[in-house]
Image (cartoon, rainbow, N blue to C red):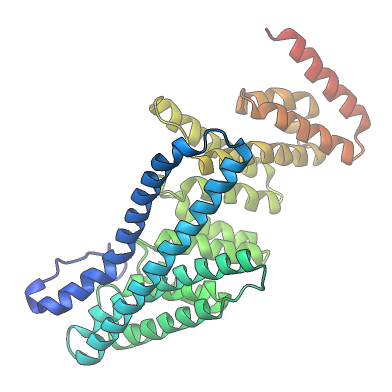
Length: 366
């Protein structure tokens, strides 16, 4: 692979592997998806079958029953997937030992590390479910143990096969495992190596987002901006609107209010444009929540500009500004937040003026 170039995945030459090896690889990559697909199918069938028996039950009891049934079903699916993964991991370990030192070793190491992290995810879910149901302290020891096992597999892969085609993915997985273990310096080293050496890798955007988050937690907002700007260059990436939101807050914390509001405006426009391009589609719940947060936070950013006495953010211009951003149901929340900020910072005269503006404007509207 060329340094810094796009990560290409050559077609595997299946004839290099025997039927047994191929079947184990297939099981390692497809088992979890199959079980979850089956669980969804069974869930729908169970709901259809049960609809005629609960017509006279109160709505609250129906919701509780469904919630409990869904939780029980998810726990059962997790246990089945866990058992299947354990079998696949054991067989991959056998193959890894058999083919150590051959051209097949990095393939099995990469698959093993992937499966170990999938396994860790299931262990995480099970641990939280047990803690919730038993009301006991959360035990993440098995989860952490599996993450450390995946790190060991990745350590061997990276050290022994630095030219393997999946090495960018390996650095990302190792960084992710360290991040989950709370070892952020180690995670940061892996993410930085990935973005510096393989900037076009599939996982580089996620790595940039994690690096930005580490910088924000360290109160180094300028450094966070450098990472987030890399994501800003990728408007087709799913992380793009969240990166704009983070950029808005990073500039706010750097006391750059015009830039903060500019990024907020861009993110809101991004969602509005997406909606206008396809009127039949709707934003997901997570997108709607993120857009609402940005709208509400714009009141905070504007208020900071007002307090800094920046001429373009006067109290008299606030209502017009907010209405240009939003004309829907979130507008009322924005106006209320701005009023609360005026009150909490003892701007009594401007608060009175603000209330009069809002009331007057409301009476003028049809």
